[in-house]
Length: 309
Ligand code: NDP
Ligand code: OXD
Image 1 (tube, helix red, strand yellow):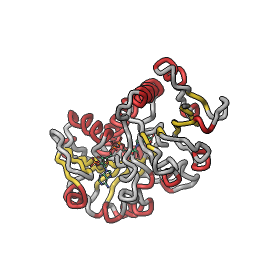
Image 2 (tube, helix red, strand yellow; image 1 turned 180 degrees about the horizontal axis):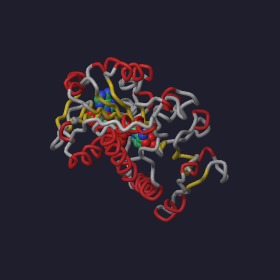
Image 3 (cartoon, rainbow, N blue to C red; image 1 turned 90 degrees about the vertical axis):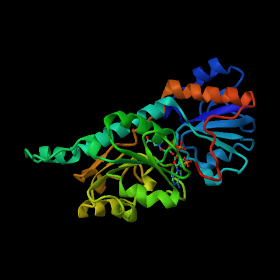
Image 4 (cartoon, helix red, strand yellow; image 1 turned 60 degrees about the vertical axis):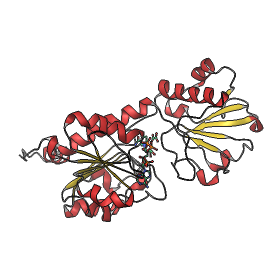
């Protein structure tokens, strides 16, 4: 019985010591470094392991995602009995809350406009508003959406949220499913996408969605690049339906040189750094899960493969 890790060092995650001290009975081997018997591998921890890599391990039982999302894993090639566990850890949650607070304040206070005016050498006055006048709508009320709402509450933004199933969150107007989508969008001056990428959510940030938002609103995408239709965003910015966007994720990543997002004056781009898996907190969550596994307890962050998240 072996836990194998693949490619984690590139992300600064060296978890061998944490797992060895917490669960010494679980051999934790590094792919490409330690000698590995493929038949003994029951568990793999990886950010993005290709399908051909996974296929080498006939007895694989669990694939642990190093990220909160799982769409980067080769899910279509994964045998149906393999369980998938995503990373639910405080470092990612806190990082995303910080990013959303920064993005909402920057868009609310028209930072893209003021930066572009500064670059052009212009002292351009524009009236500013208070947070109580900018309604923020969060798509996705999971671990990250809820943390984003909590950090925004004391800033005074009127808040709403949208999820697949109905939710109740104090101080937040909650909408759910198709039936609630139009009403949710109609009052999102700043729309923040924190959805998982699934067949249902791919391309959800598109022309039709933007058209249902208040004119002159703004969008933040920190979910996945596949949520956004790039040309629809550029078109909505050109027409003034949207006034600005902040994007942490793109399709593809890295975004190719010369892509319009790099130079667009109304787009702020960060290279998928909104929330990073943190070495210490995440290593301990992996160790917690190994302990739970050995004790036959439910795992933290187990994904419903039929639902896709
Ligand atoms: P969770 O699984 O905890 O939450 C997902 C939320 O999305 C739930 O509220 C769920 O609804 C909702 N949802 C899913 N499908 C739909 C749908 N079809 N319609 C409406 N709502 C839907 O995920 P997390 O909050 O932990 O993470 C969200 C995503 O953030 C990740 O999947 C990943 O893609 C992205 N991410 C990005 C990072 C970055 O650095 N940019 C870092 C980490 C994650 P319900 O509550 O009903 O289940
Ligand atoms: C994640 C990510 O899914 O980094 O954790 O995007």
